[in-house]
Length: 387
Picture 1 (cartoon, rainbow, N blue to C red):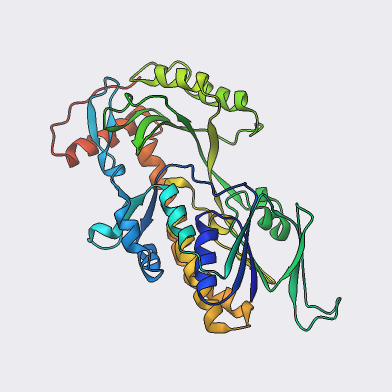
Picture 2 (picture 1 turned 120 degrees about the vertical axis):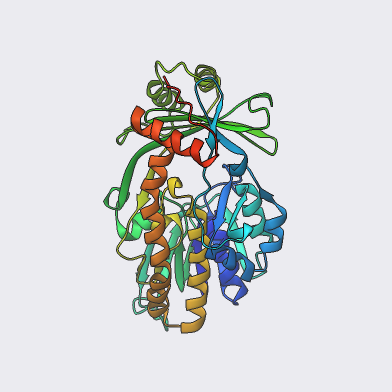
């Protein structure tokens, strides 16, 4: 089949690799001018490890494994360690039940594994699509007629929306994002920090009630991470000053640990990334000849730590079911959903627990979390207040 994939992120590249390896003619369209490599490390967990193993990529991924989360700790207002960040529960006791890898490394690994049956077209995007049975143009079978921003057009047997939480394909086929978005009451921000003296080799996180600030170093990059509880925020995502104000307002008056210095870095930064922790919840991930994979269909929010894993298992299941069901794409899509749905349900349900662990809402919640961390580390409890 001739298949179009919208999006060259982890979900799109994994789907392209899996579909192309099964002999499909795959075109990937990506609105950026190149592969997007920026982003913090990601986790490959549980059955997603089996998915990359069956792709033949596990050995290379293991070679690039990071231990950032394992070396991260919560600190109090004076920078004294409180306890290590608990690694999320995974299935099995094997050390590779949770593999952390830089997003850039995973994207490049998937891109390098693409077969010759896959073509990536950059600086273009789906503008409109029409799913029909072929009767209007005399063709023998159904297909999806697609118009692109570049002015190109094409007809495809199937279209895969793998273009992320803010998916354009999903909006064209399923309607506005607001109908499927579930905001989890958390926003996060990332900003690059100049120099290499911030973390001292240890990744640190400091909490005050409802807020978190941290410094993380991986490879040659150091970033400040901010998270804070908040309802939906209406702002122009293209306005850097507006994004800065959101972070500065959220941490106004907080003087503990290094937060004042980190806020100075926000003020001086040429740009920073701000978004909400939100989930996409759809009753079905396919309609006609269009199907969604990854965050486009079932974003679990970063608080779950399972978005990458869902992208990898989703790509694998979709390709396997299309292979098993031949031209019957409807049955293939239904079986893909049946296999993937339990993983999505579990991941989305885990996000609130992740939020409460990372962002205790009150002083009492924060003290209880820290007491648990100290107890787990086998140290006597020494209660310290946070500003």
